[in-house]
Image (cartoon, rainbow, N blue to C red; front, side, top):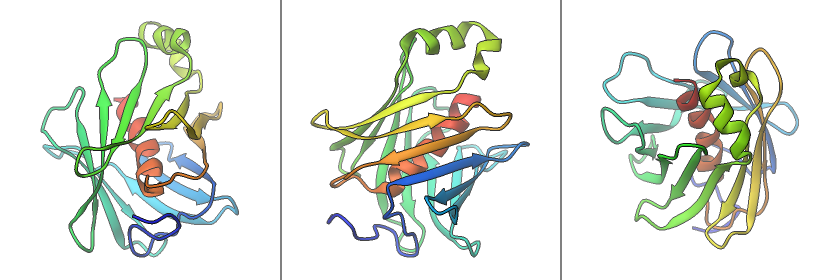
Length: 191
């Protein structure tokens, strides 16, 4: 996979800054580029045996989906699938940990591409046990397999979830996987 090419046709995620905004009512997201243009929309499907998040382009055409591998996933795999080809592009794994939120992005073959990890163990632990602290914004670091920083995800203090996603040179990691992971993490952590 070469850097700078669209991994999924019809999706331009060549920028280094995105804002993800959740609607007030349910796990429905709009992804804006650095200029404020909507580049993706995503919505968690309700009442499905397996969790599923279709992502559409600004015209409403589905370009990729994030699907749970199993019916009941406490710590499980979510596959990012190109809608046009049906091919897996990446796998997002939720790691079960008590005091940190950790997600791994892997290639379809299982190679580790990136890790998304909550930045404050103390805050994340407190949020798990004290409900009102759940209102505190989340922050995550994104690192490559070599430990190099690939970016960050920072939640704004707001009535609805709004995340600023910064991405650097991601190398072989598809930006679609990072942006989809940010939306999926928010939806999964709200459950």
